[in-house]
Image 1 (spheres, rainbow, N blue to C red):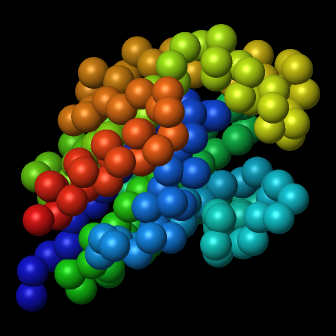
Image 2 (image 1 turned 180 degrees about the horizontal axis):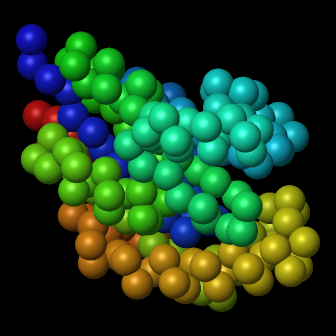
Length: 189
């Protein structure tokens, strides 16, 4: 049986990563399964455990780190962890499924290095930092202080874009979706 491949998608918060992945997955035109990340943050309204994230307590997350259960994890903000469980991808890839990962830039770089030619990495960039700030404000889910923290982190994360196989600027959502879909199609063909 042919092994599946990994599609790594990373972007600063507010760049449309989840929207783009959701659109590609909803169409169902590509043989893709979504890897659900783990986090120790609380669910946002409407988020479901095991669907949007595996929501873990601080202790559960730290225990899984100690057990080496993650292919990657990152403390994205002080005390706030995100990671990809090895079990989320290993079994699916071995069964021949392609797996799409929605992970932070450090995780994207680390997973790409671990999986070599079995993975492709795509960085979604905002048109500008000002546009990113506007998108985060329009979400209405963060305080002004949290938005500025996210914008500061985004400026740092942008410095990693050259470590990715592809960079797609999300200036127009349909164009960005189409470009990413083409990259994935070419990679898994």
